[in-house]
Length: 316
Image 1 (tube, rainbow, N blue to C red):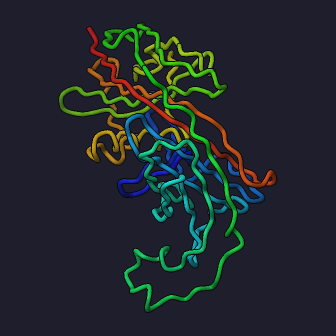
Image 2 (image 1 turned 30 degrees about the vertical axis):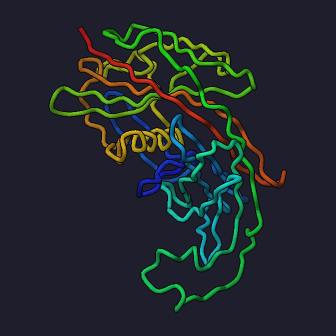
Image 3 (image 1 turned 135 degrees about the vertical axis):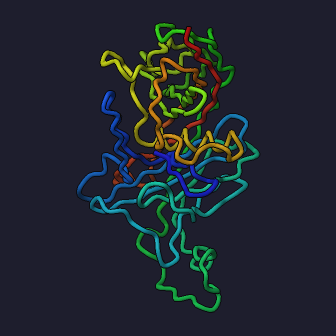
């Protein structure tokens, strides 16, 4: 559920969610600018953070809903994310309605990220077109000020590797390995795929079904969960849903120094992946659920760390 902003901090979408429905054959795409599974009644909060291997920032995000409607933070209320050394206000609007995101410095690689709702009327309006020190109507702190939540990031997946890195058939399979931590964290495997016929590109992401999501250091992966045939009805491809799409899109932007397409998973040109050369960025996430400051808070909170490798598909 991470959130994507409109600028360079787009990830944190570690939080929130979109839904993509891709119907093979008809190739219809539906993108809802909202978070799925938000209940129709009551307050619901989604908080997340992800730090990728060798990136010193943690992408953080939050979205708050009341009776399924997004709560827009106004009047100087803003979420602050912090480590022991650094803090940042989540001032950027995320890709999803009601979401706010930021990139939190973490050069010391702290594991704990704290979220706190604060009242900072001047800082929260610093990007407005008018001088905030001249036009500052402060209604006072809202009811959410003082609410907090903590996330403990799990260890980054180290020594990630694949037994095969070059493929010629979607019937191929490989073994994905990493250094197991054995802490009870869950693992997630996702791919960001860019296929080309020399003229057009097909860019998409998949969620890979894993048999055992425990942190055991090994997983068998079938390539037909990554590369698919547009003309076939007999396939097990699972396209990215929810925050996973946002997380991978932002990671690609970060890893390519902003060169990746902002709409990587939205602008699909349907050349057939099975017939063309594809570059596969395979991402492994170690995921850990967090806790809110109050047991009565309804929602989702999690932290993750991730790593990636690159694979290649060239059909015979």
